[in-house]
Length: 257
Image (spheres, rainbow, N blue to C red):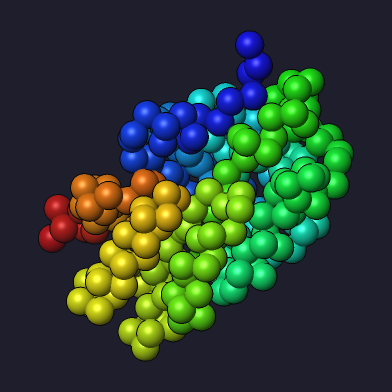
């Protein structure tokens, strides 16, 4: 039996909503500390996070060992960045700022070997991580998530969702909020944005694709799962450290007062 099996796809095939962790800090120890929580997926953020390619090579084995699906948010819809992340062993790509069908087609093509796409062959580490049958299974195991975070993306949503090979969409609430005049932020409460997020989710579900949402807190993520989100991201390693440290210091100071 092939060892190349994407645990995130298994989660969805079983009808479960996945919980995704976010790695903004390229620390092996930090990734291990995150991984023990039992996430379904862990994403290395190479857009706004601080990891480079060498960091990616160190972090992916840690994620794989935990049993979570290793995802990468690439900096942009750039074939070189996408293919290098996949060649390193990533099981899925989150692509930011997908606004048009052409963007989505370009993204998916970079993730798929011919004849389904234009991915160049050279799985330097992926073959070692996932076995000799990697090339035969990659096109059906790799997850492709297009970020929906602009007005143009919302306007083109139904057509974007028709792009062959797209697994689903990933809602970026900060940029989406800014695009519609509400400013950046997670855990949106504005009625207009709440309705818009639900519209995106329902449209993806109608198309038979998954919808994912980046959340700032666990309670909000739990409610998003209950509303039908297929995957929720909860905060990030950097924000967990920031919040935990702030709570600890505030608690000690309060006890001293």
